[in-house]
Image 1 (cartoon, rainbow, N blue to C red):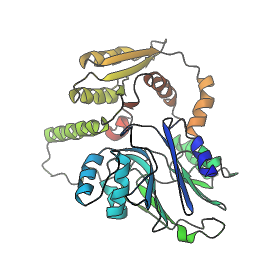
Image 2 (image 1 turned 180 degrees about the vertical axis):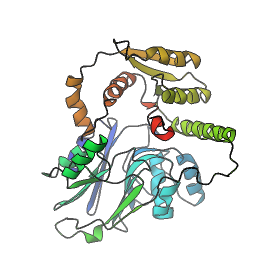
Image 3 (image 1 turned 45 degrees about the vertical axis):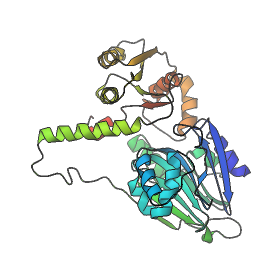
Image 4 (image 1 turned 90 degrees about the vertical axis):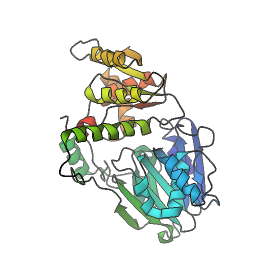
Length: 366
């Protein structure tokens, strides 16, 4: 228990609202929670009806209501209204095959006490981090490097990972800065059988691992006669549906607004689908050459948002030690600095924000 508590303590900044632990046989799991859905009964870890299967989960399952109804029709009983519990019953019903039904951003671990099996799963694009390490003392996993380093090590720097960082500006999965720590790749799962754990608690190897999703081929499945107008209408339909699903929340929600195309489209879609004004947040700089506030104001006025602006004078040198601790590993994108600053401002009013991150990558904006 002391080990898993020490690991979770390193994640308090990610989950300030609650904590929980479960020990079952050779497995101990813990959770620091940021409460978004089911504030009253969403305490983790969560188990199935008879307490033989347990889950810890970071993220959000956007289609959990539909999955929940289907699982209830199949006879599963739910003790909470959280999206987390859906993962337990889906695992019981469909095993690894059920992962493909999930829509969301997630990293989760399921401990099956009957099978003595630990299952780790990461979302399709790797939005949620999931690290693991196999050491002489056992198998460890967590949302950040620092929680693993707290209770294990020392580790050797992975020179291949550093070369990849210098090439790409970040360290892609499955690498980490350390040879002994790896990331569960995006769109993948991993299972560790406890029957392979000898008396000293060491894990010799990962029993099974695989991929449940890969990016589809461009235009795969579209009819040959698909017109430009039909493409535009389909993109808008899918885009609006994606935004709508991400607006599900039991806490105040807003949006980052830079005035650029990506964040402006997200705000426009949110405004079309919300009865109340959307809360938007923008930051500006003293230097007009870098100040995008006028564009953000135009969008805020067009969609009648509850708009808030913050003029910041960041000292990047002072911020770096804090960002290095939060990021855990080298990351060369300077946008982390303004993102951190606007998040500091927004957290005074909301707990969840949508942003335009990913738009350039998806639509070829670069």
